[in-house]
Every structure is written in structure tokens, then in C-alpha cells.
Length: 328
Image 1 (cartoon, rainbow, N blue to C red):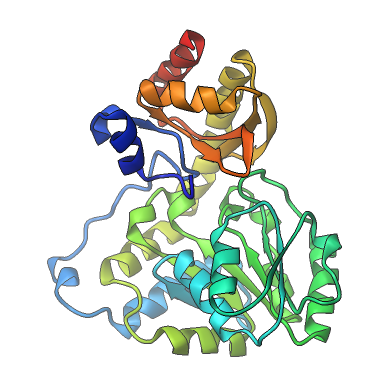
Image 2: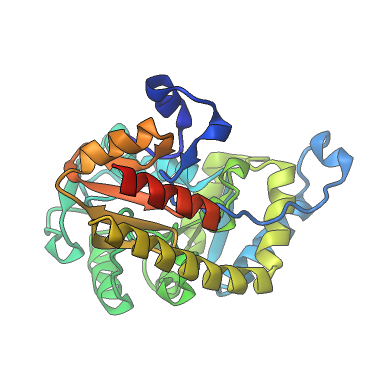
């Protein structure tokens, strides 16, 4: 599987309708932020500069971005992942792996050599840039700020860029390395859709030194995000109470998922409060057996003993999952 979240593959192979499937293949919050009412004209008019400024102000507060650091919105972090290699100086890039595979694909497409490294400390002197997903997807590994700062200093000496993809950092804001952007050529990516459960809205952010963010903004052009995305994003990012309560709920749900997986004989490998990575010697067989019961999870072409499970949306769905595992 290249990605999770696309039930069309599951239905092509195993039948059924979207409503019948329990999709555990993503790391997206299954209980999304409640959509606020929107004015009718937001669907007709172009997004205004005022709308964009309001969204960025909300994002700056939510992500604790200092005033002297730049921030720009995009239609999902995937768009930023595609753009950044095109704007970076030519040179090899180290990508801490295994991780979200679109990073390597985007850098190669832009003409850079992408070098997979098992840990950021293994980055060679031959690379100019570095990409790290922190917390990592799919194993949840977290690299501390001190090590990130040392690597950022090395990358700066090579006139390169360090990209830190913090798609899952909303679950623990202390993980964020935004402060590094004040001193080093570091670009931090933040995903809106995962934690807020609104991936279809397509909204993400790049945070970094003003000159780098200005280049990204200029490259993407005007009206890059839709009016509804700007409006919904602003309201959600301003709702600190919802964010705090959601973090606690996700941790509780993840603990329940852990218990079900452990009972079924899966060994925990890692993850975040939005997904769990587990190992089983019959992982591929479990993937198929669950699919026949219309439960979809994430398998990996590079490891046939690993599966990733996202959170079931409620206790009833968790029980369905537990019963399916017990029946295999």
C-alpha cells in the first residue's frame, strides 16, 4: 500500500460500500472538529486577504510561532512537500527512514539525490539537506531538540535546508521544534487535517525564516487555500479547549486500542495517539482476513510483518475490531 485512507482499493478487492467499512488505515482523528456555520457567499467569492491574515494569526498562536518567524498556509502539507525540493539548492538530501514516502519521491522528482538514513545522526557530510518526520510516521520516533539543533547547525554550514515534518506534533506540543527556525534554515511543516480530523479540507502550514517562507508563498501564488478552508481552520485553531480535551480523549482511545492489539498477540513497535504500529509474523494474513471482514488497516511493502492501525471512532467500532481479531 502506498498510502492509507483510500477505501477504493479495499472495495475493489473485497467489495462492500464505504459505510460498511471500518477504516483504520489512516492516522486521522476519527472524531473531527465540528464544522462551524459558514456564510453562503464564502462559496462564491475569492478568499480575501483579511481571511488569510486571520487564519495565520490563529495558526501562529496555536503553534507558538514567534513574531519574527514566517508562516504560510497551503492546501495541505503535501503541497508543501512537493514545493520545497523545487525551491532548495541542488544537492543530496538525507531522509530519516522508513517514513512518509512522499518526501523522498518529491525530492527525487525535483532532481535531488535522496539518501535514506536510519537515524539523523547517520547523515553523511555529502548531503546538503535533511528531512525528518517528528514524531515519525509510522513508528512514532521523536528526536529531541538538542540533536535537531546540532544537525540544523551542520545543515546551515552547507547552505542547505532542514525540513521537520510535524504532522503529528499536535498530540504533544512540546515536541515542536519551531524555535529552531529563529536561528537556522529550518522549515517546520504542520498538518491541520490529521489532529482536527478534517483531511478533506486540505490545509497545512510551513513555518520558517522569513526569507524562506516568502519564497514558498511567492511560488504558490495567490488564493492557494479555499475560503472555507481559511474560515474553518481559523475557528478550529482558536478553540484551545477542544484541542486540550481532544488530546486526552485520543490518549484514552489509543490505550484501549493497545489492549485489543496485545490480546490478539500483536507486539507494539511504536506510534502516536492517532495510530499504532505493531508486529506479527502473520501480519499479511491478518491484513487480508480483516479486509474480508471489511476492516481496513495499513500494511507496508517494505516490511511484511508490520501493520499500522488508526483509532476506531468509538467503543462499538473497537468492539467490532476486537471480535474480528478473535475470529481470525
